[in-house]
Length: 429
Image 1 (cartoon, rainbow, N blue to C red):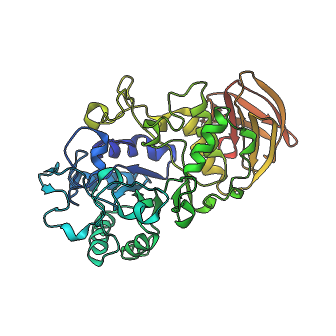
Image 2: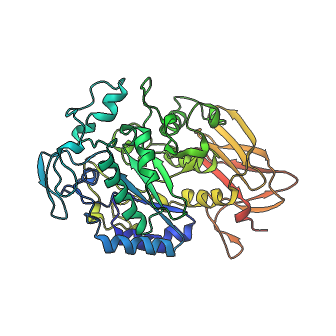
Image 3: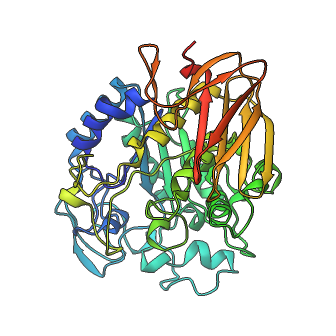
């Protein structure tokens, strides 16, 4: 829920996210940051007070409680690599600072001595001790910094936070991250961790060195396949590519950075390919998928509409991908199929694929400009199923298209630049 404020996230958890079957909601960095309406101000920490443009500590606590009551766990975007990059200023909770001096938190000795940007991306030391985009780089190898970051992490956990996204994790050595995580008081609860480690060809710091990371190569592979630069039919066995193992990968079609740098698919991509890629990411067994819910912008620096008071009303400026029927239908598909293996894979040409997930679900994706009619082999039990791309099962009836499985097969026409998906959780009879 990119840039939604805490009150809005709380309401959306109860009104939609929970009932739709989402397991987690990811929210923006909650700590005090530099003042400003731009989205990126959130990523320039000033202190670890939980007062930000998204709300105060009590509103944050209320949001966590509301989401938990709706059956939704909370992941917090967390800034451990750096502090703000401004020479001086004040944060949105009123804390004054100068670069390398954040009163009551950090002083000059708590930052790396490399006080310039990263010039050589083939040098691991530069990547992890120099300044990313001019941001004051914390000396995460020191005892004090580690203990202070763990203190912040434990504060979040004390409020019920269930997971952390570690921003700019590539710029922190694995040993430093592991040490800080080891200090967190999880009280026996499993803590979901996803780390931002962007792959760079030939660079010495790679995603495979980290556990539980965002799979940026997955994002790039989807872009290439759905734009026709490569073949959709090549995306069958993603665990055999040398990427992060699927059990540790957090996959996504786009994130808040990529949709601003023209590097990936976006909600504005032509020919429905963003939606098709989202369907694929939720259908394929590789990784744990995240759905980006973002807002429209003409300036890449622009903050959210309506001051971050998120809503999905027409004309609000929020895109609300998490509410799109195709995506909601596939969230329920994924919840139904669980860890069932991929079965019955077919790819009659480079931009058409179909596959099952054991005896629980089946999906077909047509990234061509003409319809695809076929008889598909499936392990699904006989019966009539709702196409969850077009509608849902309610009171025993399908609001969209239906398909009938008989004797291990069914006939369907997959629309041009479209998809179909059926599963046992949306079986009419």
